[in-house]
Image 1 (cartoon, rainbow, N blue to C red):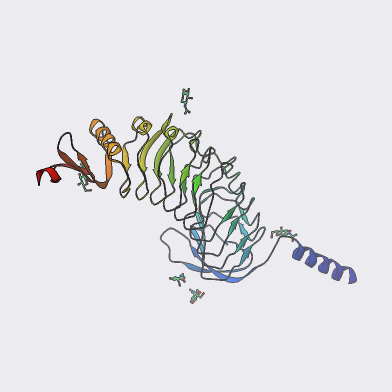
Image 2 (cartoon, rainbow, N blue to C red):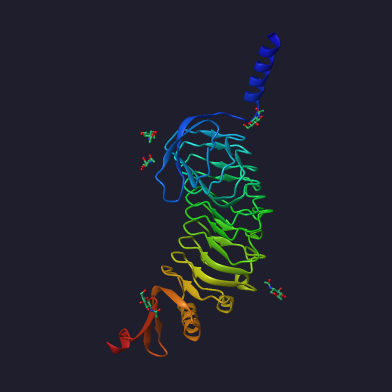
Length: 334
Ligand SMILES: *[C@@H]1O[C@H](CO)[C@@H](O)[C@H](O)[C@H]1NC(C)=O
Ligand SMILES: *[C@@H]1O[C@H](CO)[C@@H](O)[C@H](O)[C@H]1NC(C)=O
Ligand SMILES: *[C@@H]1O[C@H](CO)[C@@H](O)[C@H](O)[C@H]1NC(C)=O
Ligand SMILES: *[C@@H]1O[C@H](CO)[C@@H](O)[C@H](O)[C@H]1NC(C)=O
Ligand SMILES: *[C@@H]1O[C@H](CO)[C@@H](O)[C@H](O)[C@H]1NC(C)=O
């Protein structure tokens, strides 16, 4: 009798002291198939399924933290989504999920940090932690996720991309970090991304001013690089050496010119609308490049005077026009 009580209390203390925490009583929505109506799932202590399902959505409930084994899923599941539940802390080992997940999405939560060990070992193809308040990411946060292909971190407060990300996660080819607070891209920033396919980088709407010339070290093939809405005045020449960048979007920046090497980088699509500072001689180089290749182009709206040929060259959207130069009357002719 006494022994039993003692064991019970020790277990209890151990349970409190360990990283395990209890998931409060809440209701999840289960979509059994892709087109099923949702069914209520009562959740208590830990998040578990009772049968194979397509999508488990926990939305508009209260779930302030996830601790070790809070999510314990052994049935087949394709999408796990935790949205607007006040989730502020996720401890390592929170996701004990056996099957292969297509998507793990955690959004509209007051989550500020992604810790080492939270996603490690998960068999998941896409992680989407967009629309939170993430400002701190452990260097190891995305390590050891061998099936991971797509990582979305948009609409957060991320200040840095680390070259250490994605150790032992060799299949990440798509990274979206739009609407964050990046100010620079360091050397080797993407070095651990996929080597056997073209990468896609979405880095628009940050405050990027500076890109290290080795930022794309060991990334040979870039399908799309979006840098719209940043504060770039120039791009380093070496960015374009020994690699292909198929689509480059760099609208709404403060570019003055492109490095000449850009024109040898296999770029097939180049958008740089709304760069009012762009220099005329450079713009003419771009025009020459466009005329000699098969390139989709979007120019900033700028008028350049070509005095020698007595024309104004109007660059606008995807076209250029030439208009006769109306020479301003000089004092002598008045
Ligand atoms: C934590 O939870 C898991 C799964 O529910 C359980 O197997 C383990 O014993 C728990 N750990 C402690 C210290 O209570
Ligand atoms: C599911 O739960 C919601 C509240 O969480 C309730 O309004 C609704 O009636 C429940 N639906 C079913 C089918 O039980
Ligand atoms: C969750 O809350 C949002 C915003 O209040 C609402 O638009 C949405 O319909 C809610 N979803 C569910 C399943 O209750
Ligand atoms: C480009 O590749 C050549 C040949 O492999 C090498 O010599 C050169 O250093 C490389 N340049 C850069 C900037 O990586
Ligand atoms: C310019 O853009 C318009 C509309 O998007 C398109 O119809 C047209 O073919 C483009 N012209 C060139 C020269 O690319």
